[in-house]
Length: 188
Image (cartoon, rainbow, N blue to C red; front, side, top):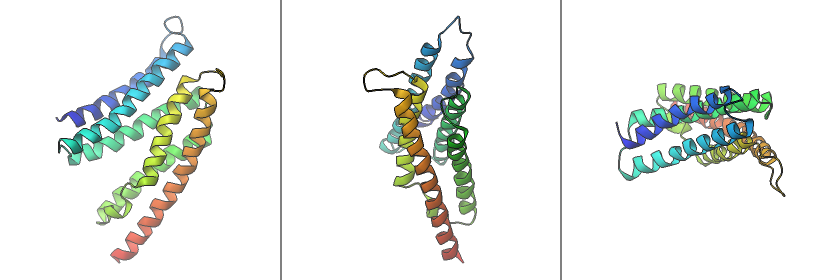
């Protein structure tokens, strides 16, 4: 068990906490307090995503298991947060479907490409990283759900950013499918 892998496990452990804070009785914790706790947990978990990768490379602790577990943790964390936001009525079902559906489709595509020996054809690229970064900023803003304070309304900014993330999600999905088709043609 390396420190980077432990951080990934901690990120996965945060998922039921982010979801569970909304299941607490309202006389224990108010909705604004729930929002703040969930947003903070999400931000801390998102930071472990960056930090575990940094440490794995820095300490030369990159492992096949870590490379598998890290994106699974990310996808579960984002999907759980989107489902919470959907239940709270802060996002639309189409945005949630686009983002979650893309993650499932690309995971299946990567698995298939690995089976035919062409996994490098659909390796993570800058577009996927920008999409992920946009989601990781949008989701805590939507969880926080602060009403306008001056010019800043977290829900509004989070909604706009999540719409951008959904557009990047579609773009990156099409891009990965195009790379896969090229990879398949090269392997024939």
